Length: 162
Image (tube, rainbow, N blue to C red; front, side):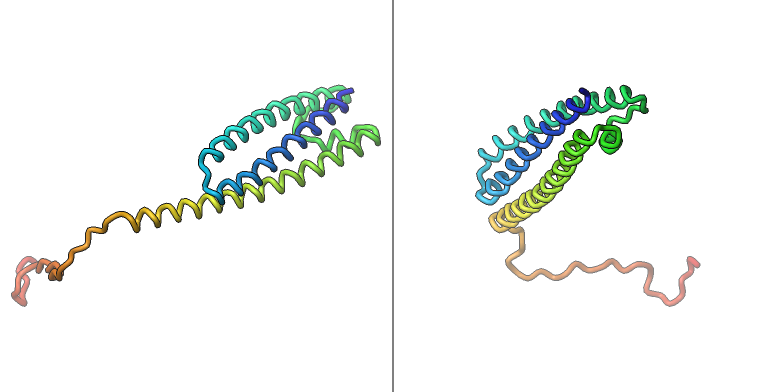
């Protein structure tokens, strides 16, 4: 039964990651449009997804720990590979498929977040350039002589301080 709980947790995680990936794709379009209101709402939705992922991950870790202890193994909640090895063939196949899909979805999410990060950075650069163009520059309008450097020491050829 704990293998079933692990499978359910992985399915929830996969669904949440797919949904989060959808939000990341929407974020790309929102950043391109420059809609800050929609971006703020989207960020709140992302935070809710992240909390749900954290909760589901804790459930998965508990199920993995219970499964491993039930099989007489040392509890390592992060080891889905060990759970797959100890599961029945049908459970192992389902868990392996879910693990692969989750890894693939996490990779897509990472790529999309990297793209969004670059878009936000470029947007900030554009804002800074625009502000620099609008801000008045304090440049003199007439010619000024360059500042003279102080002459150090005396003009004599013999330095008596040596």
